[in-house]
Length: 214
Image 1 (cartoon, helix red, strand yellow):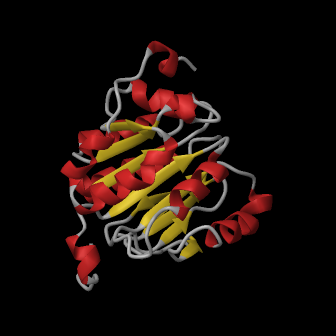
Image 2 (cartoon, one colour):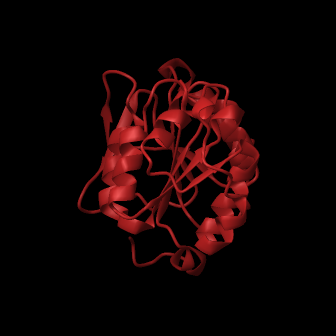
Image 3 (cartoon, helix red, strand yellow):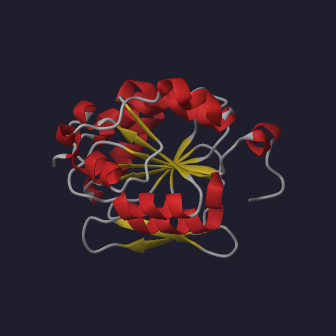
């Protein structure tokens, strides 16, 4: 990552957090981002399935729910841009050799998987993934990639999700580190960003068959 990072970011255990969500995601994202401190040291990238017609309103709404700066991701943005970057609707991103995000339009719903796959390669064990509420299985392949390259994944407990499909699909990969209710995700992010072992008290029991049922 870039050499001129501030001290707090240089000391962070991760280079980036990618948060993926779909149905029910706006409310879940507001809950998570509102609870993060203003000095949260790790850049965040948000992938939320939505129609392009509400792009501006979505980014605007998040700005009023968090103490961190929020921006719409533009092509060429560095991966390690501080604050919260929101990918445009129906677009994903790859990471080039210089660590810049390259946007591309996606046919279909899989906008999280390509981004997570590239983040996993670029950041290796310093990648952190969060899978929130949503239908279908976007982010499941990305979760596998993150684990393969040594990163970590937090998944919203399906029973606390408006739509359990995405969390259940991520859990079914067997590549998830923490499964927690939505209300505990901000505390886990803060703990993992500063000291990974501190997140252990937030761990919950392995998912039941009902949690994995989509």
